Image (cartoon, rainbow, N blue to C red; front, side):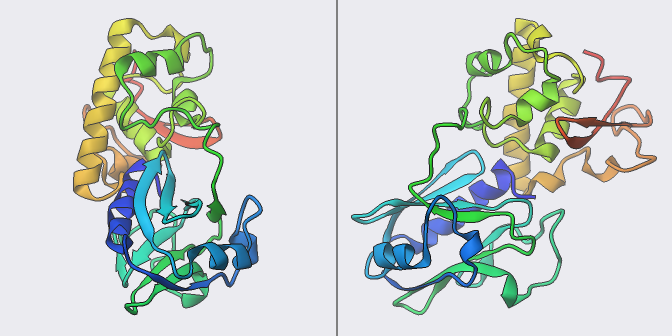
Length: 261
């Protein structure tokens, strides 16, 4: 599933379209257009123009347009970005392993013959013009320890649920949350506001290191815990059978031996 790590890879890939003139916009699925965006509006603002910047806030990719609005791309659980046939990630955990052109939900063709495509088998992402970002919390990759502490403070919600709340911290998904809490030795069920300052700093340290590791490895699905997130899975640290819980509406795997903090 596209989390912060995957969307950052998409952002890097999207830098390859900057400065290239747009020749055509294809929107075969009007349902995929969000926030009042229409095929005609996207065509009007993009054709003859070019993208000047590629930015990311959490799981949202923002493409700046010369003299126009911002195009926002969301990828849901199975969306990927392709530029000139290149996919920056290659594998998404809950997506199909085959490519079907009918899953191309939105695309831009450039005057040089190249193409940028949003491919989404489950159709859970979307394209918007000037998307509202006011509801998003600070990006997890640039969040300081003090900011993380503020996001957790005063809440009785389970720690993992708070980390998944995009209004508090943006970009963390299910796989990253499990990996970070497992590395930090913190229970996902613990009340968020109960962490001591030292524990917040520990969590922040592991969050930063995990994001770097997963980005270098090429995906959120490449964490140390990932291979054991299944019935009968054993903790890679101590060999204890992992617990399976539903937290924040998501299936969670964690170790009851070392994640006791």
